[in-house]
Length: 227
Image (cartoon, rainbow, N blue to C red; front, side, top):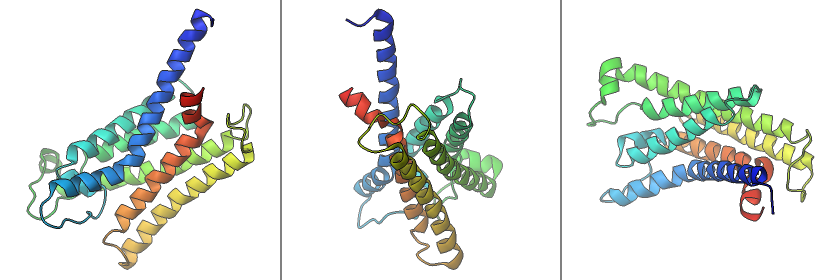
C-alpha cells in the first residue's frame, strides 16, 4: 500500500492532469463547437462566420466567452509559483485569452453595441481585442518552443516510444504551424485573397496546433488514463 503522502500526491497530480486534459479538450473543441451550435440555432441556410471572435455577437456568445476565460485562468495559474520563462509565457497567454473574451470585436450591421463598447468606443475595444489575440497566438508559439527545449532536458518525455529529439521536433513543428497560421491570416487579409474566412481558418489551425503541443507535453493523457 502506498504511503499516505504518496497517495495524496497522486490524487493532486491526477486532479491537475485532469484539469489540463479538460482545458486542452475545450481549446481544441472551441472552433467546431461554435460553428456547429451556431448553425443549429440559426434558421435558413447559415454559414460559418468570418472569425471565431465574430461568434461573440451570436447565440453562442456564452460558450465563446466561457471557454476562453476558463483557458485563460488556467494558463494564468498553471505555474504561478514557478520562476521560469514558461510561467511568464503562460501567464501572458492566459491574460490575453481573458482580454480577447471580454473585449469583443466590432459588431455586425444591425447589432447593438455592448456596454463596454458604448463606454470606451467600438474602435478602441476592437483594437484591444485584436492586440490581445495577436499576443495570445504569439505566446502560444513561444510556449511550444519552450516545450521543445524542455524535451531535451532530463527527465525526458514519459512516452519512450519516441526519442526526446522526436518530441522536441514535434513541438517545434507545432510552433511553426502557429506562426504559419498568423502569417496566413496577415497575408490573405492584406491582399484580399480568401479573406472572407482566412481569420477563422488561421485561428482554427493555430488553436489545434497549440492544443496538440499541449497534449504531447509530458504524455499527460497517457499518464492520466493508463498510469
